[in-house]
Length: 218
Image (cartoon, rainbow, N blue to C red; front, side, top):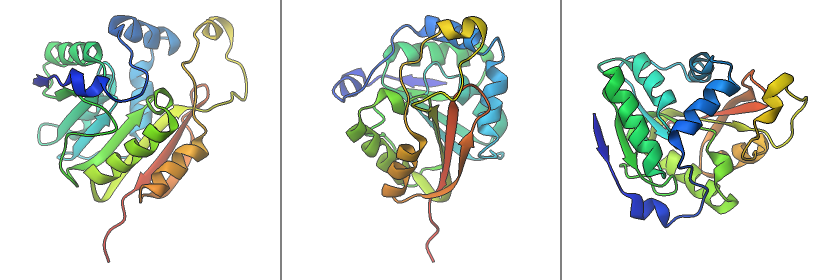
């Protein structure tokens, strides 16, 4: 496992950074009633990862989704994770090390991904778009389009702006950082040159997903 830091670059771009990594993991566990891994697997089911694929997790946080993705692509696949928060990257690296899973994490901004064009088969972004201002969402979408190969897929998951129904019980005590209209996410992806494949409910609270694909040259 390799971890590199580029904190100065990440701190120069707009957006909300989370620094309390351990608290983030605890909050996720409580919010999902201990079923966080099941939720991650459900999200990844939308892209149908295959052995040997190259995957990028943009805004990887503490690495939970990247770890699950690596389990699915296997030893012949590669997973990279980037996040603007050094604390998140440090915890992600620690979790991967303790699990004995080879993943490369890097402290970098979503608006300027440090990878070559067409590098990845699948690009993921979960619960990250709402941390970015609108202009940065456009930049992030363009960057994800740039680094995904022709025919590759991009999956964005986030909270919707409005909730259809309130969660029951103590879940109401866990606030969200915000939300993004799924139509806005789709518009950013289309504007970046991607084609929407499908969109809908994740099946947990008011999480929505948008799945897009990079066009294949004729």
